Image (cartoon, rainbow, N blue to C red):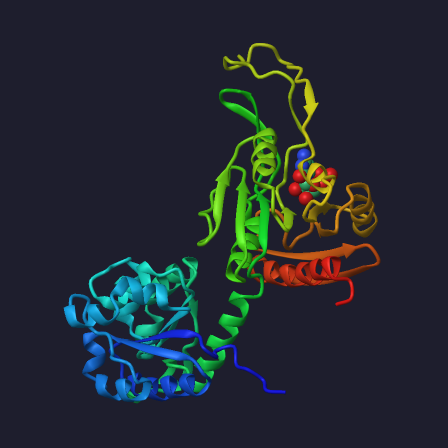
Length: 408
Ligand code: C5P
């Protein structure tokens, strides 16, 4: 059996910027070519001071792209065409200057314009002096890029070209090839899957200034949506009021009340393969909404509540509906309550989290989840919600594939 590399026939743009590590990019391009990738090289003017375009042209067999406004280069493959052609763009080495320009959303040369114009996964391999790397400006630029979906490969620690020792060295070409392979594998793990996730609380209005709702930051649902998009799924996020920015590559629908959320979910549920209900939906709403602000006046007010629709139950009840995953926040007898909810709501999987402890839960960035399904379960240990979301999706995909093809 011949094992094919995930890089085989992939269209990869290696973007080289002005750093001494640019010499390693020649080997990187060669290694990618050996694994069957089709490579095109983009260089900044700064990069040309360190290594010649001729080197890359000889290694790839393709002209090197440098200028945005070069009519002959644009004639061979224009910048928008190049942005569409790419399956991925790896900026290696990524200098502090280029990271700053990308973080600011500039489009003042070919490389930055390409990065704005592409929908392909992007990766950066930073390379710079250790103090430049540690600088708060660089760190916040990288964090900004990561929030926008850029993958950061490295940097490594060790002896630097400037004679100093510390973090800032570009990863070795073989490590970058490995990182890029993982990225492309991950980017297609959920390709073709339509996933819907609900997140955040719902607000049930009492009057124009007051509401009732559940405690929820939306972080878990947003992390699931981001991770699924990262894995190549087509993601719709139906979100109650939260203070989070929608993750890149996700279709986000903002709603307020449980009934809004239900309407939105049901109008977009057709063809959804996997439905993950991470929202902390308010179980009740005030029976009547007061058009005017209720005056303090009396020392006691009676609020009559009406049960809200159970969105998850409605979706799980559908004939030929999606694979359904619910959440259960419990303070005691977690497994017992979670399993009875799994059966009662006819879910495919339930994720239980113990709330009220000292670590994890509602507003925290961390959590631990116990997953249960008919006849099995898996515990995901305390970790960042972003990592937990990925682990959850791996488990969901395994069960989903088992459901549609039990022989697997
Ligand atoms: O029954 P309980 O509210 O504990 O169930 C929690 C699960 O059901 C969560 O996944 C939540 O998103 C979902 N849910 C819902 N609609 C409701 C209440 C809960 O979708 N009205």
